Image 1 (cartoon, rainbow, N blue to C red):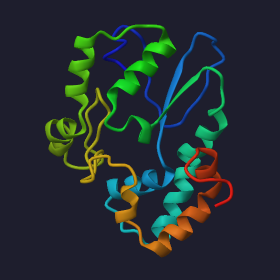
Image 2 (image 1 turned 90 degrees about the vertical axis):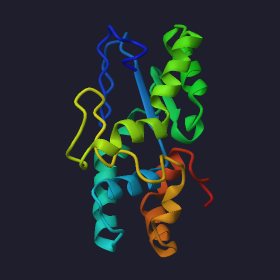
Image 3 (image 1 turned 180 degrees about the horizontal axis):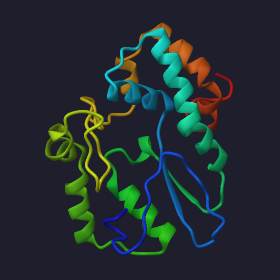
Image 4 (image 1 turned 30 degrees about the vertical axis):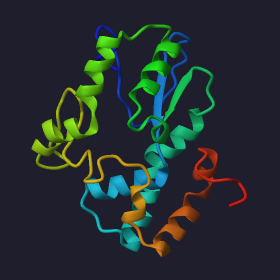
Amino acid sequence: MLDVFPYRNVLKRHNIQIRKDPKARVVITYRNPIDCLRSSMQRYDMKPTEVNIYEQIKALKKYGLDDLVSVFNHPYVLKLKYEDFYEDFDLIFDSIESYFNIEIPATKRAYLKEKYRVKNVYEKKISKLAGFNDHDAVTQWHGNHISSYLGKPNSYEHFFSGQQLDYIEKELSEYLTFLGYRNKDE
């Protein structure tokens, strides 16, 4: 967002707070909570044990999902679903243009597509960082920010066993349904 709004105060947060200021705009990106769980465990090099899964689910709810649900239907929030914009920068640009009533020129779009292509970010930035505690102060990217799956949706299927997924889906059932990752009847 800083590349689109270089002279505005753009804050990145994991916990979401809606200001009462009617001019404040909030853009939320969200993804399948099970992929978030896998990502969180991999950034800390955690094995998917019963205890680790339980603790990470608890943390995911407290430090992300509960906030997301509380603001999800707020009228001034632009929501971008990860699986929809994965490898589709134009969806992001079109949504931002519409939401902020601006235009992002084609040259800027091309530049940003190249700059933020997952493989480029991984090779030029992330791979040079030692681990999760090593981070870039400007981008806030940290070591292990991008896994070997390069952000591919549903990569959790290669990380958790079938039995673990049954447990995780049960524990995250309300969130998965609310966010549109499963039907209410499942």
